[in-house]
Amino acid sequence: MSFEAKRCGVQFSPPAIVLIYEHKETKHVRKRIIPVRNFSKYSDYSMAAERLKNHTRHRDYLEGVSQSQLEKLHIILRDHMQGLSLEHSLASFRLDPDEDLNKLDDKELARKKGQMDELFEKNRRQKDDPDFVYDLEKDFTKPTQEKCSWDDVSDDGF
Amino acid sequence: MAGDVGSIPELDQKKYDSDEQVKIICLGDSAVGKSKLMERFLMDEYRPQQLSTYALTLYKHTATVGNKTVAIDFWDTAGQERFQSMHPSYYHKAHACIMVFDVQRKVTYKNLASWYKELREYRPEIPCCVVANKIDADLKVTQRSFNFGKKQGLPFYFVSAADGTNVVKMFREMIKRAVDYKQNPSDFMDEVLQELENFDLEKKEDNSEADEVGLKAESPESV
Image 1 (cartoon, helix red, strand yellow):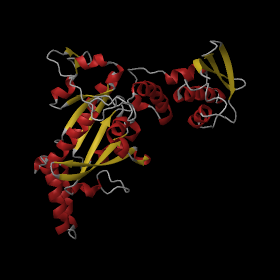
Image 2 (cartoon, chains in turn orange, green):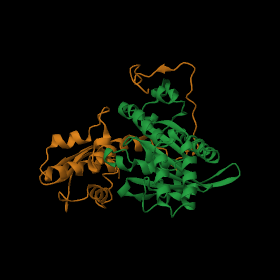
Image 3 (tube, chains in turn brown, purple):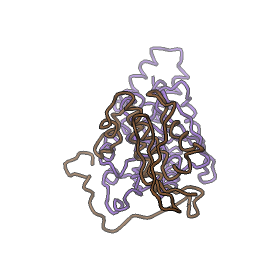
Image 4 (cartoon, helix red, strand yellow):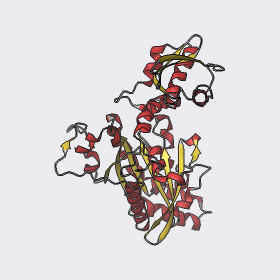
């Protein structure tokens, strides 16, 4: 039996993870509501997400949903329990390329890192991959390189 | 005195004076991928020691350079501003520096200037390089030239901690340069400090002498 996750979201009341998936053989699209139990505004979202991902009754359905997305949904849920708005939660994930992340505290920074990790995991080559090369080298030196717009003439030290 | 610079009780930084102990620091803004680069380079060898009070992660590595075996401590530091007061201990006795920015975030490139300025205040001569990380996000960036490193005469690397591009090459070259520097230090302050330490041993009892030496250490130009 295999399922293809289409969309995954969160429901506030009662707290649940909502999954839209397709049954690969029958091509039927269904909705599965997975209640989030024993989760409070003080709970560890990453542990809760891991627990859910490995849950015997749900793991087959959640195979196509990344750990980081489940973490994010739990963060939204917890933010809601703490009385924070959905807008606030979503903004905390948003990556603004001009934002100076050195000014954030650990929790805020973890959210941004979680966001970046999605791309990292997508592009990651691991030791067990057949095309893995430990000492991978690529030469990028080209005779004519575009000038980088990040270098302004006015900048001292640049 | 000099010995108190950035003292971390849990860590004995004196060991970095010995020939086979090398210290390489990793600098750059928060979330540019410093830890991920370390992990990619060390792979199975990866067993960090976390000192969260100092916002510091230490990675130990053993390498053979020429016919010599050296023990390298990589200091992976935090970019967050509230740890600024820890910076002197990061720089203390470092033999090389890897400066990292994120090609997707201009601000991390712009901040290299202040990281570099601070580094040079503490370590005017140690080998340093500029690393452009996360090129896997958009390979087009590798067609651009980032002039900050060039202007400072620093080697530049396009790397990706995710797919591994040039990570090992960069670390190996920096280890080599750290060891070379160690064998032939050109930092004036290194020599001054070494002399002061010898001096200290000889004149430990004499407090007035030690004070005078302390003043000299603060303004090396006048020596």
